Length: 437
Image (cartoon, rainbow, N blue to C red; front, side, top):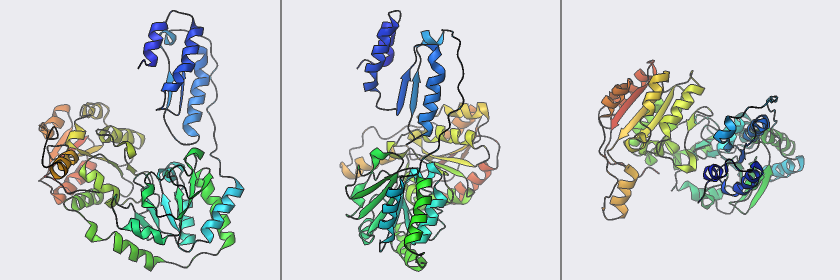
């Protein structure tokens, strides 16, 4: 496939009108971004940047791209800078809110299914207020963790990929889906869904029995609470019933060791508002369902992309953005080696995030599947690793190793690391782990 840069290099020096025509044709090979523009005249820069930030702040958040050939970068022109873009995220239409409120108010046993859009929109208080009015339990996607605090009795957290709770969900006659594309519609059992999403294209795309409401989650939920309250009074407390559901489906019998103890050790070492970046490793996978989250935007994942190696660079970005917060990345040994060089970045700029490297000398998920599902044919999944402590120290960072799968030592080491003004790597030697989902 010919990419944009190759085409441009071939055409540099020819008529720029031809380049504009090519620019239009290349729009068909830009599926990754929400919006993209190529600039061939420096006078177009202010408007392009202005539009890029509008696209970033409006609708469903997705990447945007501005592409400038080196020849254009060397050009000079008189330009006028534009004022920063201002954008108000709109609520849904009054009619759609009213109909959604009617469906919810008439539901006998509603459930709320919160996705990452709740956190992105800052809709947490509005969601909780509606959940309390309806006495509706709340489940979340991994991206939606923190939509409401896991200390609240209405929080059921994140069901596992394979979970008996999915069958129980048939007891809920209406499900309010907020900021969630329903990527796994198979967990639903034919119930009526009321779906709120800023991106109209997502409404009902993955689940047919859906009443879609296009609008900002926060503004729409606020208006929906008003509409629901006008139809029915607050539902009497269902705390005892919901705690019974939590105990039945999310109780200790679902815990897997040593993953549970290690996850709890990390939670115990971190403040409530500390930020955990859950990498693609066994403890990271387990944390999706069993790591309690108490505040919005304090649990970061690579979402459905499942990117090996994203955790540590993401943690550095989170720490730069929120230097006042404790930031911990959970990584496997294989995933960490994708971006090990970022230890140099952390040391150079004094970014005091902590990375916990769980070292099982393998791409653990792959090795387990090869062993359990493919008759033990292990190929390409076992690793020869460096000494991670010495490696960290060679970059100028702190390196600490705790005992194999030792949760108590991990908690103590993490507490010390969070109290130290230096980038820290904590290595936790691991054996083969159970299926974490």
